[in-house]
Amino acid sequence: MKKTLIVYYSLDDGNTRQIVNMIKEVSGADIERIRMVSPYVGSYDDIVEMGREETETKHCPEIKPLAADMNSYDVIVLGTPVWWYTMAPAMRSFLSENSLKGKTVIPFATCAGWPGHVLKDVESLAAGSHIELPFAVKFDMEGRGEIKTSRHELQEWINQVRDFITR
Ligand SMILES: Cc1cc2nc3c(=O)[nH]c(=O)nc-3n(C[C@H](O)[C@H](O)[C@H](O)COP(=O)(O)O)c2cc1C
Image (cartoon, rainbow, N blue to C red; front, side):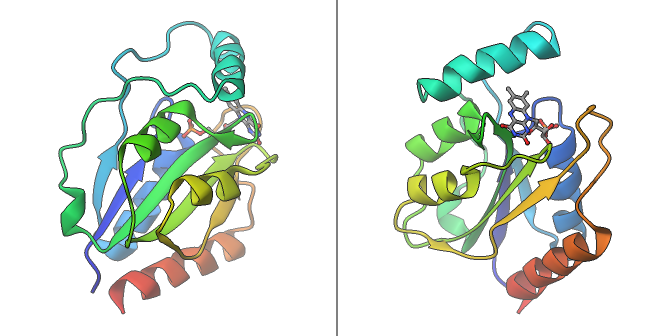
């Protein structure tokens, strides 16, 4: 059994949290949500626009420190929504502030169908880590929290993650 921490960002604890819960259920991993010091305000469309500016400029918003001691974990599962084909700015902040060198990182992203280069971007910011089982999960475009990736494909990945963590 590998000591595992799931670190994720999710705008309203929505799609990404759904996947976090599935991993938690099969692995018993600890969970930490990345929280911004000043969360976004405004409509969804406002946030989409703000997100565009922030991802274009690689802005790193101020985030709250995590309670968990990263040193005591072997595996870090990283979950982010896709924002403009890359990771959400708060995940960029987390990766810029925390070294995952020597850890195994399992990156996943949730999106509405256009994952872009998110997994590659997470991988390059998690420098010196060992990447396992990167995966993008597609949800509906209307924000209903409906998973569009096939149940079979998603379950296969969840099983692989479980086997990797519990082996
Ligand atoms: C600012 C912003 C930008 C987005 N950009 C993309 C994108 O480039 N590609 C995509 O497929 N979905 C995009 N989406 C949709 C989200 O990735 C998708 O709804 C995700 O699952 C939301 O996760 P969450 O509920 O955990 O925040 C974007 C959403 C927001 C708010």
